[in-house]
Amino acid sequence: MAALFLVNGILFGSWLPRLPEIRDRLALGLDEVGLVLAAANIGGLVGSALSGPMVGRLGARRTALVPALCLVVLLPGVGVAPNLAILVGLLVALGLADALADVGMNALAVRQQELRGRSIFTRMHALWSIGSLVGAGSSTLAAGAGTPLTLQLGVTAMVGVAVVVAAARVLPATETRPRLRNRARLVLVVAVAGAAAALIEGAPHEWSAIYLTDVLGATPAVAGLGFVLLTVGMIVGRLAGDRFVDALGPRRTITTGLVLVGVALVGVTAFDTRLAALLGFGLWGFGVSVIIPLLYGMAGSHRDFGEGSGLAAMSVGMRIGFMAGPTLVGATATAASLPTALIVVVGGALVAAMVVIFRAL
Image 1: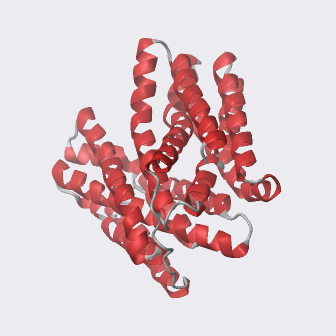
Image 2 (image 1 turned 45 degrees about the horizontal axis):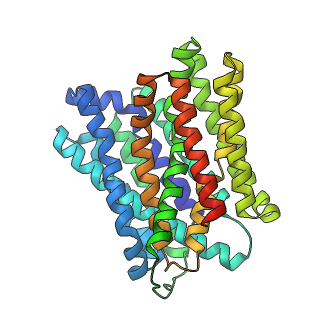
C-alpha cells in the first residue's frame, strides 16, 4: 500500500516540469496550455464523483489497483500525443484514473489504520509528497541531460507497472462495508472541508514563487526556495504527523496545523522581508501537511458513510478547491494585491475549515 502512494506521487511529478517541451512541440498558446492543465482536473473531478460507488461495488483493493495500472500505462502517451485534442483527452483519462486510484488507496489506508489501532495516514501522504519530489526531480534531471520525454515517461511507466503488479500480489483481499444511507448534509460538509483544505494547501504551491518575485523582488533562484521550503515542511510534517495524532487525536492535530498556517500567513504577508516569507512558507508547509491526510481519514472512517463514500465526498471537494483556488487568488490579487488575496482566500478557508471541524465532523 505504501508503495502505491509513493509511485502515485512519482507519476504526478514526472511530466509537469517538461510542460514547456510539450507546449513547444505542439505549438500551444497560453490559453491552450491552460486547457491542458485544466484537463486533468476535470477528469479528476469526474473520477472523484464515481469513486464512492466504485469502492462500494468493487472494494478498495480493486479500486486502488486497476486505475493505478491504467494510470501508468497511459502516462507515456503524454510524450507522444500528436495534437491538442488527443493530449487533452489523454489527460482527462489520466485525471479520472488518478482520482479513482487516490480514493482506493486512501480507503485501504483507512482499513489498515482501523486494523492497527494507530494513525498511519500522514506517513502514507508523506510518501506521496516524497514521490512527487522524486518524480519532478528526475524529470528535471532528464530534461537537463537531453533525455527524450518519451523515454523518460516510458521508464517511469515500467517502474510503475512493476510496483502495481507487486502490490497486487501482497495486498490482501478486502470486503466492502454495508452500504449506508449517506446524509446529504454530511456529504456537503465533507466536500466543504475538502475544498477549504485544497485552498489552504494549493495557494502557496501556486503563488509562492510569484509572491517572492513580484512583491518582494526576489531573484528566480530565491523565489524557487519558497516552493522547496514549503515541500520540505510538508514532508517533515507528514512523517511526524502520526505521532501527534496518536498523542492528541485527529481533531486537535488538524486544529494545531490550521493555527500554524494562520501564523505562517501572517509571517508571509505582514513582514516585508524575503527571510520572513521563506520561513513562513516553510511553516505553512509544516502546518498544512496533516490537514488533507487527516480529513481523508476522518471522512473514510465516519460511521454514517459506506466504504469509499466519505472519501469520495472529500475528493470531490478537494478537486473543486484545487480548480477554483488559482482563479480566486488571481482575481482578488488583480482587484487588490497578492498579499490581500492570500489573506482573504486562505483566511476564509481557514475559518471554514475550523467551523467544519468543530461543528460538523
